[in-house]
Image (cartoon, rainbow, N blue to C red; front, side):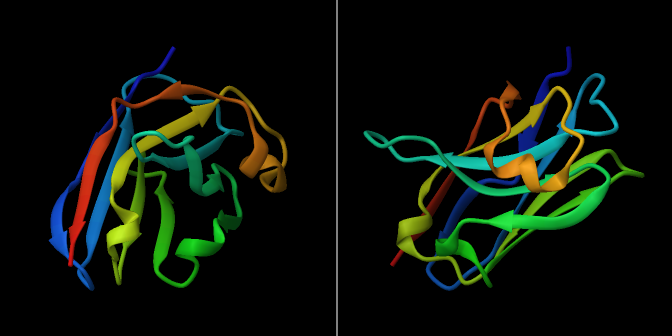
Length: 126
């Protein structure tokens, strides 16, 4: 089973940008969902954005629409999350995740994600 390796977290001032990257170290099914989640201490982990490996319309949680962009570079086998116009409420640990197999892109927001990265801290200061 694949592991996921994340990078790109860090500290930034409000209004700034960061780009997270996630690379599987093993096999990811060619028809799978991949997603970015985030978690703040004391709160449940929430899905931020998801995308299907075959394409289709990505999903975004309302709070990041218009500011975050999820993308998948199949040639580089890397998932990205471009985060612009960051605000303090975006401060969290961000996790990359993948499921085993999903045939349809519209299932990605609620897919059962079974493979997770180690998480990367994003801190936005005012």
